[in-house]
Image (cartoon, rainbow, N blue to C red; front, side, top):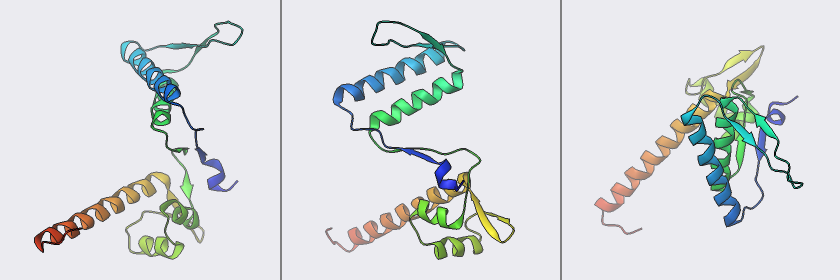
Length: 156
């Protein structure tokens, strides 16, 4: 199974203001319950009025709380297994750059990888670290450009 098929990107349906508020309240309730005890349960209410209780491990409840928080922000949500590895093509797609650029960054030692036979594999956590570092460099470069423009008295 190709790596990207294992990655799940879920785009929540458009949420109404009521749905967003419900997600925020549910997130707060879950997180507060976890703060005050080691165990918590979720009670579901069905359309026929039944109230089944479902017990989940605290780690699962924390994940659900984080998911509800992200959902209330309205953006896409990606779930990627922690030990996921990407090919150079998949890494390029993730970073929105070309494959030759990814290979150049690997060869220059700026992007960690491992070899599987003749193929390069990039761990997802290394890819995220690289993306954060790249974003930081871009922000610093933009800040320098803005400083230069201010020094020259240019309006932008």
